Every structure is written in C-alpha cells, then in structure tokens.
Image 1 (cartoon, rainbow, N blue to C red):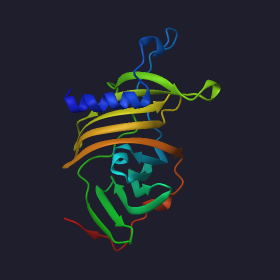
Image 2: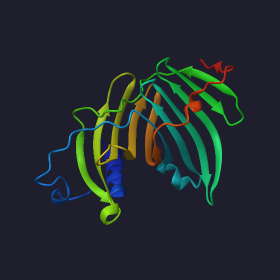
Image 3: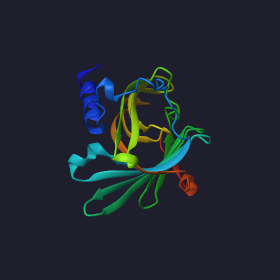
Length: 212
C-alpha cells in the first residue's frame, strides 16, 4: 500500500473512531461478520469532506437505482450560514453507458460512460477493519468499516466504507484510483439516507447534445 493510501486510510479510521482494540471489535460470542450489501436503491445527502478546507463545501444529493442501472448526482456548494447554490446535475445511465451533464441554467450535454456502476454488494474478499458506535446508550448506532478493491469494467479503485451494523447503510466512504480515464480521490459522509422517492431526477432533457 502506498504512503498516500495509508494516510487516507489512517485519516478515515481516526475520523470514524475505528482504531479499536480487538476487545472492542467482534465479541467472543458473535459470529464473524461477512461483507454485506448496500440497499439497491436509495437517496441521500453526501458531503465532500475534502472540500471543507477550501471554504466552499460541496454537497451532493445522490440517487441510485441499481435495478435500472441509474444514478444521479445533484451537485451543490454550501457556504455557511446555510447558503446552498446548485451547480449541476449528473445523470449516469449505466444501462446505456451514457452520462448526462445538466447545468444550473438547464443546458445539457452527454458523453459516453467508460466504467460500470458500483455493485451494491461488497466482494467476498473485503477486509473487515473494525467496528465501533456513535451515540450513547440505547441511541447508539453500531457500524463497521470494510476495505476492498474493484479492478474490472473500467474501474481500478480502492474503497473503504463504514456501514451501519444491522442494515449495511453507508455512513462514510473513501474511494481512490481511476474510473475510466478519470482519477478519483473522494472522502464523503452520508446523511438523510432514505428509500428512493424522487424518480424525476432521472429524466433527461430531450435537447441534450452529445459530447465527443
């Protein structure tokens, strides 16, 4: 593992509190956990933690429908106190291998997608990094962190993700590597996670032009 990857992983573990001793990991009477599957469809608000230092934090409304191979990101900038400005919406149609980019003014262009949609289930060789909890008493939420790689279908990435203990809902995620020809280096937190409700987000403007 490269020095940069180790630094990212260490920061992730420090932020999530997963640097725990074995005594605080899986109990003696508990079964060893196996990699789990995220909900196949959902929507959530995702904060780009790397943008915090820039003074203009980015937020994403993320919409995902694995069954239809559709994903959408509504990108916004957030500047305290509560000023949110939409920047663009990206619709990724993995079934057709096309990405649509819609500006805040409504202009739309499209280009080919060079990589596959991330699967909802972690690979069987995912490595359990540890587990801990947030909150207090009966209100505490347990979660686990897993690390794994994807090296197929145009993807060459390393992922670390913290998920809730009971239902595998993502809490925090880092991705580094390449997807298609684009470099990826993200650290994100998930909030307002719920079932997919806004299906209109996947509607593509009929006038969308094609980027080569």
